[in-house]
Length: 211
Ligand code: VGL
Ligand code: ZN
Image 1: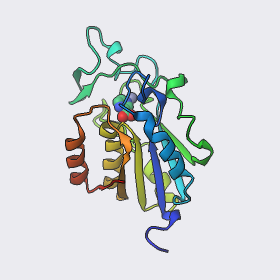
Image 2 (image 1 turned 135 degrees about the vertical axis):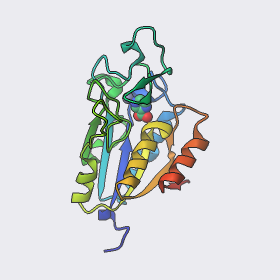
Image 3 (image 1 turned 60 degrees about the horizontal axis):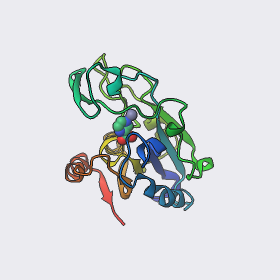
């Protein structure tokens, strides 16, 4: 079988949810502009498997500034030995802004990984939670799901380029998948982050694909 057969290649859709788009509390500038081209890619027949992640926080999640007296959104706070960014409330379980975007052909999604569900710990990557109180980053099961189906290559797109897509791509490469970052099908939450994002991807051995 060829290395890049459709069956061995998966498309990972990271957090394509209204809360990360214009009008949402954690909007990426022009975050909605990726929806139509991602929908087209999903229908292209190039992927044997399509997985989606969904940021899915309980109310009062530890990553919300509103959960910490006297803290404002986008401040950072030490948490379990790392710096946690405190975000505006977003992607609260069962809210409209937490839904997978209705402009995607969701019937084509084979598995949905809901992340950030533990009230005590954030989860940027679709593969593993952020560092938690026990000093570990528990797996979400996504790597095993992909391996069980013979996937060797993953293409990653979605929101936000500098947070959850970056962390997902880094972990995909670390898990041994040939990983391609579909740059134009991502948008950042911090407009000044692109240089550091590209450096981090290079460091992680992730291929950046543009155009
Ligand atoms: C994200 C911040 C907090 C993301 C999720 O999807 O990039 N960013 N939660
Ligand atoms: Zn989140």
